[in-house]
Amino acid sequence: MQLRRKILAIVSILSLLAIYAPGMVAQQATSEPSAPAPSASQTAPTSPAEPAKVTLKEGTEVNLKLAQTLSSKTAAVGDSVEMLLDQDLIVDKTLVAKKGSRALATVSNAKKAGMAGKGGELNLRLEYVKAGDTKVKLRGAQAKNGDNKTGATVGLVLAFGALGFLKHGKQAEVKEGTPVKAYVDEDAQVASLGPAPETAASAAPNPAPATAPNPAPAPK
Image (cartoon, rainbow, N blue to C red; front, top):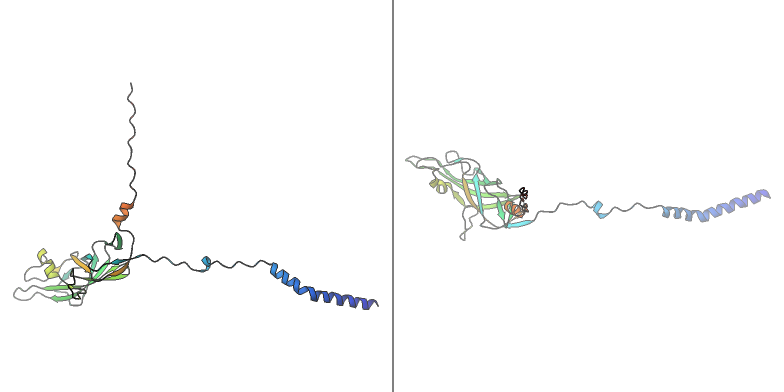
């Protein structure tokens, strides 16, 4: 009799566990705090803002200078000629290329001095100037005059003969640092490098003038 009662008690306990145990486990699982989801600012990488773009107009004057000495005695057609920007390139008070930026030209004609006092000839074809990461096409003529004059030839014999670099019957030679005037060949979108130096200087607050100390009153 007692054994039977014990068996019934065990069966009753097992039945109760089978009924209530799943609910207790689910309640415990829901009561545990869940980890917060990462915010969008934490998951998305931040990308740097792109610099503003400005338009460098066709026909804009570009002042260059030779970065090497050239001579019709040693130059050959197709040779690359290094140049440098001789002045900051500015568009609407915005700096787009700093003085010293690299430019490139190509020798388009080179003839050594000949017999009977015939002087040498040397001509360049302008290619581009670097404005940031952009290669801005150049030409040597101020106006296109309806023709496609991309990279128009700059005749150093004509441009610099009057300055005393050339003499009759001598090689055509142009010294390093000689200025060359070029022009933008077509509109180009270039990145802004910030306000032009003179613009930034003018925007700086002027210091207040120093006031002289009041003189001490003279003794009576």
